[in-house]
Image (cartoon, rainbow, N blue to C red; front, side):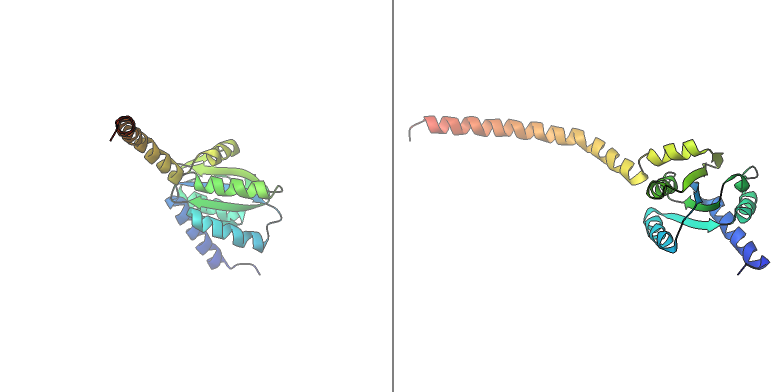
Amino acid sequence: MSKTRTQKEAVVEILADKMRRMKSAAFVSVHGYTMKDADALRIKAKQAGVEVAVTKKTLLKRAADQAGFANFDAHAFEGSILSAFSFSDEVSAAKLLAALVKEKTDMKIVGGILEGEIVEVEKIKMLATLPGKQELLGKMVGSLQAPISGFVNVLVGNLRGLVTVLKAVQEKKPV
C-alpha cells in the first residue's frame, strides 16, 4: 500500500531533522535486504548510537534539500537506499554500514555526508577504518597512564632490590 502525501511529508520532515542534527551519514545500495537483516541491523545501530532507515530516493532528496544539502542527488544511487545517521561521533554510521557490506556482498556503499559536506564512497570507506570515539578515549587514557605506571615500576624495582640485598645479608650472618 502506498503512502499518502501527508505520510510522505512526515517522513521527509523526520529525515530532514535527522540530517540537520547528524554528525555524519552513510548510504548503502540495498539488494536482498530482509526483515531479519533489518532487525539485526537496528540492534547494532542502537548500540552504536546510529539511526537507520530505508527510504525512497525521492523522499531522501527532498529531505536533503530541506536540510540544506541542495547538491545531494539521491537519484544517482543505484537501487533502494539504506541510510545510517550518526549523532554521537563521525565514524559510527560508516563503521556500521561497512560491516553490513562485508556480510552482504550484494550491497555496496554509495556515498555519505561528513561535517555538512557530501563525500564520495572512498572517504566513507576510509572513515569506517578509523577508530571510534570510545576507542580513541581508551588509547588516550592508556597514553596518559603509561608514564605514571613506569614511574611506579621504577620505585618498586628499587625497593625490591633493597629487600633482596637485605635478605642476602641476613642469610650470610650467623644468628
